[in-house]
Length: 237
Ligand SMILES: O=C(O)c1cc(=O)[nH]c(=O)n1[C@@H]1O[C@H](COP(=O)(O)O)[C@@H](O)[C@H]1O
Image (cartoon, rainbow, N blue to C red; front, side):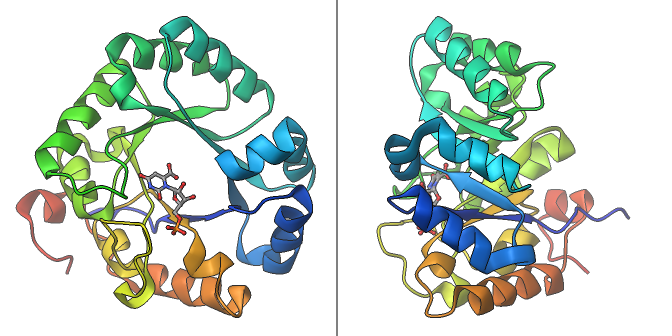
């Protein structure tokens, strides 16, 4: 039975300046080739930091969580695609028309749009996450952002047709901070996550290189599920 792939780690550059971001990228070196630029860094350093990261040869996930009228969101998606980012977020709460406009604006570009379901900082019933994932799937988005608690249910329903990006990763389940729905790296892998976002577990570790290497090993060593495992609700063999 075909297994799903090991999740791709993306380190969140949740830092206040471009210099801080570039120094972390430099420090992690070949340990990470995919970085998230979120609100803190983008508001401070703008599109220029994205261009610099692309010139450095790393992939960029632009996490702007867009939520506006369809025409405005479509324009922002086109602008993001011109920055050559691989992933971009919109809020599924923006509704079907906004999500379709985002998907259409991204079509044919190298930028894939992910719909944020319910933020991992809030408690959420799985049914609500699945309802929002359905909106994203119907609109033709590349995938959804959900917690590791719902990722297996999303994968069971949509298979490889809808990617899952899982934030709220806590090695050993330690230190949830402001997050409500956290999982370990192994749990995210066993749930069939396509991508995992690594924030403070790496960026605030005493040794970020070591922390990242440990998480990458845990992701690799976890038993990747097949879709049949997920659908039957069993642990991967
Ligand atoms: O879209 C995201 O990346 C995201 C969605 C979500 O529901 N929850 C969430 O925590 N994130 C992001 O994932 C990262 C989590 O960081 P840590 O809590 O430090 O691991 C932050 O950059 C958040 O902005």
